[in-house]
Length: 262
Image 1 (cartoon, rainbow, N blue to C red):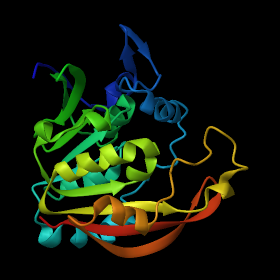
Image 2 (tube, rainbow, N blue to C red):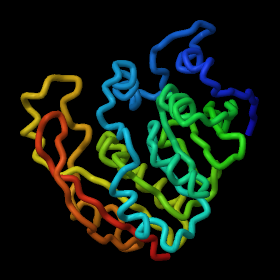
Image 3 (cartoon, rainbow, N blue to C red):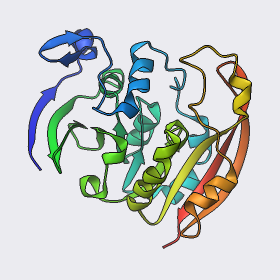
């Protein structure tokens, strides 16, 4: 695996420079994505600052159900698929955990480090002919891979004790779900745990929402589909259901605890 490294400071005076993305030797505010058609939609959302999915505080359900995800506070590494710039990573990092994210929009990653005031290194990497980047804090306990989620694999980071899937599974194109689930299963340790958030709604209620913000995504998913994806090697426990507005519509959000049994 080939690599090259540069260090980026996050002092206040360098904020504007850091938020620019360098493309072809010129500075641009366009949200650069990994080279995948799957990411074009999300690149546009970040470019237009249409990121209502981003929470401005630590997710209350992560705080409430942290013992379901990390029993007795025992976990070596926590994985955040399609992490964006979530504050949840910083919250767990501050508690001493190592956190690893995957994100396809580069500006989301640089904004995370900037807004959390964490100095980081940016490393060019290559695996199996694929180019990608690793953004890493100086102490190595925050890592975010700028890579197509479906190219992430166990050889990059080994296995995790916990995975917080907050809006990742429901954000994917439906044809990509089986491959995504296989990756999630492959990187989770035996007895490892997943805290999962999914949306429940009738797609027809979104028919009058203006494009391109018209859902799905997020795609609706229900317990029966989750059981088909995870059982029998994983147990699925429903935790609770809450109301939420998405695109101005009332929907339900369901939370599950999933445990790798073998």
